[in-house]
Image 1 (tube, rainbow, N blue to C red):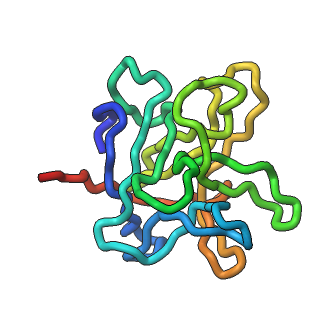
Image 2 (cartoon, rainbow, N blue to C red):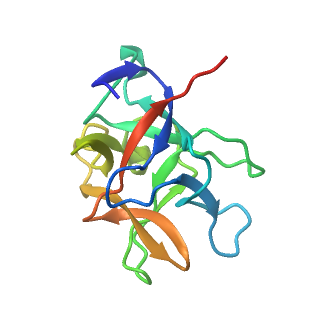
Image 3 (cartoon, rainbow, N blue to C red):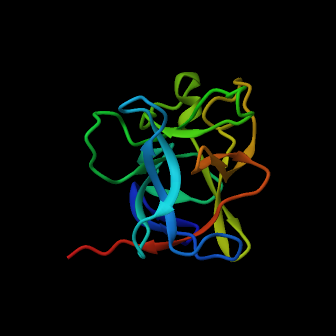
Length: 175
């Protein structure tokens, strides 16, 4: 991924970097007993990875840059009528974690959508996701942390972590 790319670009996310499980990628699954409570998990799926869509905070600029706030959406169809835009959930005291789920809002930067904004940062020979949405709401109190993977109830969930989930991109080609 270059430092800039087309607005709302769709890329395959792969994590074939050292310290990650080869052949696994970011997806979503039903969490708990709720029919459409979907969380972002790491699971075996496709050698090309899952297709993610990146939507910049300023759609008018027409580019996506590393280290800038953006929405991340899983590009996939599923039964629930819920958004596939990532959002950071409230702190879960039972696990001591902040989980990344879907159901966020695309665009509309401000205090109401503060939990829907992530950044892509260069990390070694790959990239990582970071939650630190200062440009979305300058007066909001936010935490800044890497997005990592943690095993919770047998699922590899995306959470805020001190250890980042490292990945690479593969451009989506359409015929």
